[in-house]
Image 1 (cartoon, helix red, strand yellow):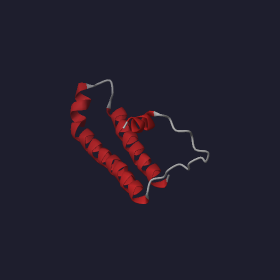
Image 2: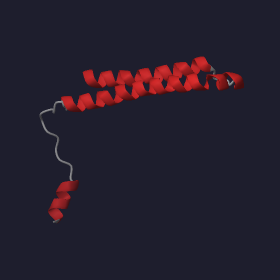
Image 3: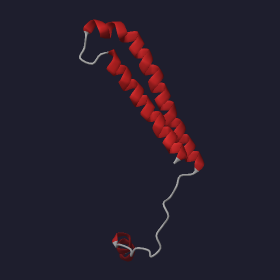
Image 4: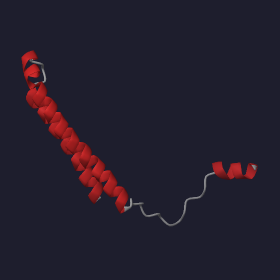
Length: 91
């Protein structure tokens, strides 16, 4: 029993042959990519819809961050999520 505990905590010597980097299988990449692309698409659609619905109230209160910066935020965030999805699929 003690020998197994010692084996578990003792460092093993490094292997002489370098291990190639592991890559994900195609279904894993496809599922991950579709999740990111779907999240980016949903974020864009729901974000623009909410901005359109709340535009009169936002303009009336005159906040520091106006409509243009909020639209840019929605587009950039959604675009980055879609880009990560494409990157995940290709790389």
